[in-house]
Image 1 (cartoon, one colour):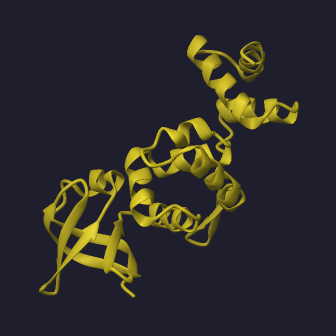
Image 2 (image 1 turned 90 degrees about the vertical axis):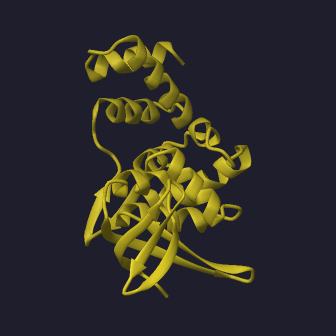
Length: 193
């Protein structure tokens, strides 16, 4: 199995990169997220996922471990293949995908090409608990940033409001009022439910 490649970027596009490593050329499929990180580099290291299927062998490359781990989680969901996972990572940043899954925001997930209602529900059902805590570099990183939005969302959910409805209400409230404290944000959100 190929775990990473370290070499020259011979050719780069938003969909794939050709890498020369010790005289051997590799075609590596990448997301727009990874492309944005490497587009101005001549050489570097890509973490990889080596996919072997009946109809071919493919390499998928990632600039960082966070994106690679999320990709592995996404393809573990029934009906989500490697190309769909790559499309998701090209449409949204990894932390945005995680947040949408953890907050059960089907609407955000459905905006991604190739993700319908059933796929969005399956992603949330199968990945929510796995993504609440992600182990990276021997540290546990929780996805709750404890910012104003998160605090308001948690308060609304603890009041018994469905997470998706609470998230949408908080987002509407933030658009209406920019400089508010958490109590004011919760009150505004409650008016939007």
